[in-house]
Image 1 (cartoon, rainbow, N blue to C red):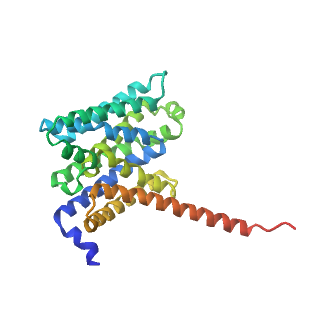
Image 2 (image 1 turned 135 degrees about the horizontal axis):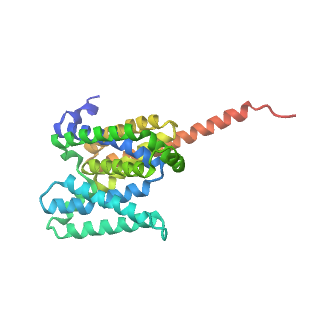
Length: 285
């Protein structure tokens, strides 16, 4: 079992593991609502929408996380504002902002001499470069995500399954939607340094989607998604260590692979259950 433990005896791999675990917990909280509400496209667009802020922060020598947060916030506000128009659907607004923000980010980064290196880091992350202060930020982000999830749980549930009833119950669906966007923004900003703006979508969507195949209660879906995300992080780091692959991309790939394995297992379970039921039905003469 030494091969299983040896990589995690290295300090930077330990930090990568803790960073991935914290990100998995945050993404489990936010990603569950994203999957339940069918907000996957919005989540993907917002993860790409961070690029201009991150690029400006890098070129200016400022805080990348602050730049990412501001850019994602602008994306969220833009989606909210354009989504109120009756002339086109919210998907159209998201698509336009998605392409526009990504294009602006690439244009900004292209002015840097280290264009290729910078863009690769932005898009795919560098989990092995996680530092102690990054872990502190992720722990604080997780605490905020837990508080928002607990305080907004009732409103989030009502908004997810019956927005009109949420309004009737005085749960302020618009405020709940804004809080959900804030939670999503927090998860994406907290995660981009670990798996990058392109691959954060894997940890945000795959574990909750896999958990939904086996659990029906929302808290249980969140717990299962957190476990799956942590498994994907540990497994991805091991594969990356021994195969020499990109760590962030490997973690995201393992998360997606776990979803397909879960879907296959659920399909087998349904088939077995159906077969058992049919065999138990007495044949009519």
